[in-house]
Image (cartoon, rainbow, N blue to C red; front, side, top):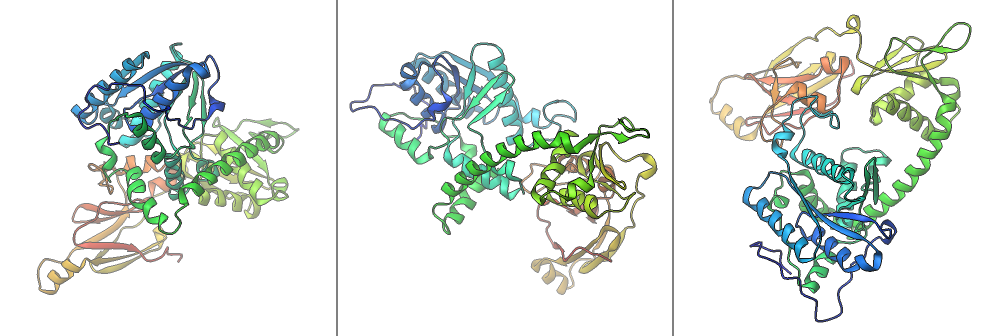
Length: 487
């Protein structure tokens, strides 16, 4: 069955043969539940709505449909809304709709949204945040108890792979939870065991059309590149890869649930508030939230538990250290010297004392602020050895530019490796336009001294390389980190 191309009215006719059935996670669907299906108009959400509508009487559900217009894709999005509204009417279901401007929200200034500390979101991030924000508002209204979204087995596999590529811990590899609790109600995912192929087959048996979002084919979006390029490539090595990724998510969810219960039991015995004071007891530090860990006791624990406790402590202070940061904390705790300090992203600071590792949330004080590092300049092609930045860069002409230079065309080009400074801008790969370096570092959650001393490479007044991010390709030159410099 092809997707609906013209968004024509949909006659919902009873099938001539016994109705098709779609596998649903019945454990999520309790009798009497008032549930709204997030209906985008795409195949997955249309299938979920049709399956729940067919079984709502048997399951004892009170079914609604809900569509959020994201303010993107112009007339196509308007047609999606009309399609969803008409499908709900044909099934005799209450219909909820709202409109948001995702593009404007993605460009919101820092601090505007309490739920999203990032100053600049991608379109995907902003759309998801606004969508779930509206779902929660809908549940808070009292009209529905829960919202069901049509995430599938394929979505789960793509999510786990995307999290793995970003370097997620096991909580990230747990992927999409079948049930997400919010203060207003639950978000349910009854289709996580169902593939897209099964959904399209189900809709074909029903004679049910759907809408196709043209942006799902745009390879500028990370999710689409994983779906259309990376997963098919990896399935050439293992045709059961999606199944295995979903199994990994199930294992990770179960193990995370166990770890969270174990940490809730152990953490109060090991994590201590504030600093010790003479005569016994403990006191708050300099006003910033802080926790301490007895390093002697920490050393007796298994490495897996050591890492978990350190990350758990950091999370209590509002930080989520990555693997290198966690290893840095662990090294400081187990083999550091009294007086040693470590400053990490997200304002997390650590200090080793004779008996404890002290963690605090907050930036370095003014007297600890780092002075600017030296600037390194060279003429392309070159290799810059920059011990102050612990880097060595190799900068070369691209093949076409090398040919031009060989013919005597063009003047010598000088590059400068330096600290970033206010006003610097970069264009990220697959980005719609330039962004301030400050904002990129905030999105990377780089703070304190590390942020102040972040290196960039400048050529002819534009930044062509920045540590830790992928910029759009620069015509004429290629920049490569040959190895971190340890001089």
